[in-house]
Every structure is written in C-alpha cells, then in structure tokens.
Image (cartoon, rainbow, N blue to C red; front, top):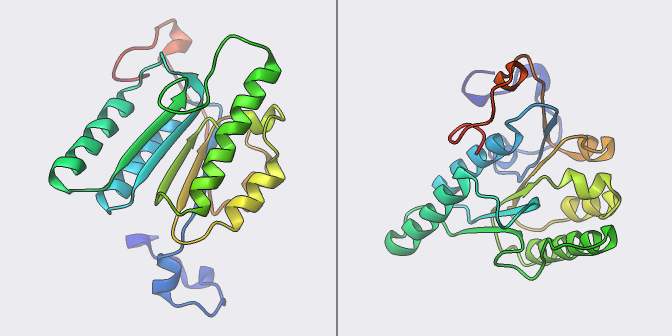
Length: 206
C-alpha cells in the first residue's frame, strides 16, 4: 500500500470520491496481549494534534497517581497551543483527576458507576463535537467487565456527528467492537525483557 493508497481490488463501490473516503472519521481499536497499545494510540493522537485536531485522552483504569511520559508531553503540547496557536487544544483526563469521576477505594459497583459516568461524559462530548481525536485508553476493560454496554458504545460511535476520530485501547476487545471498527491492530508478543526478569523502566514502560 505505497503512499497510503489501496490496491485497485480494494477500492469500494460506494459512490464516494477518494477525497471523501480520505476525510472520513475512523473508529480504531488497539488490542492484544503485548505492550504498546496505548503508545500507538498516543502516536496517532500526536499526528492528530499536528493536523490541528483537538485531542482528548480519557484513561479508564490508571489512577490519578499513575504518571506516563505521554501525559507530560501532551500537556506540554497543550501549553504550546495556548501560547503560540500551533497544533490544537489538548485535554487529558483520568480517574481521580480533573474530572467528576474518580477511582477511589470502594466496591465493584462503585467502580462500575464511575466508569459509566465517564462514558456518559464522553457521549456528551461526542454529541457536541467537542474534540477531533479521542483516545479512550483501556476502555475495553469496562466493556469486558459489564460496566459499560458494548452495543450502546458501538451505536454511539456509529452515530457520532461531524469529524471525530476515536481510538480505543485495551486487551480482550469485544468481537462486536472489532467488527464495528474501521482499523484494528492486535499486538502480539514475540519477546520481552520482562521474560528474562528485567523490570519495567522509565522511558520504556512509562
């Protein structure tokens, strides 16, 4: 697929022009057992920021205390946009920080309610076309655990208005979500230093 062009056999007969297909918002799923799912999503979000798409990251499992390098980088990009106008606005939300929902000690029902509240907020933002690029990090888990309804997620994303890319990450993506997505990547492990007893390190794992 040189220069991002599909093969002649893959061109659909949908009546759309090449430009229309190129400017179609995508639903992307990064799943699988290997590390790198979120990292790949953040890389796509970086491209979105460069293209002027307002970026919003929503982390569904990591707590407010967990820091990742990409968060610091994107917050810095948000400040760059505010001062120079370059790129686009950036928002980074995670449980327990800067948002109404929180990951606190409590029952599974408490966590389920918090995750559902987070999804409701995303639904509101999609309806308002508030961002151009969403990363729903580790969002497969609330769906897997039954905290958020998979069919509702698929219907909401299928009907989202305007131009809004959405990338969902996490292991064990529901087959229905995989079927609905435009792009699905499954990361599989070939080799990992942790297999040889090496611990995670700054700059690689976070």
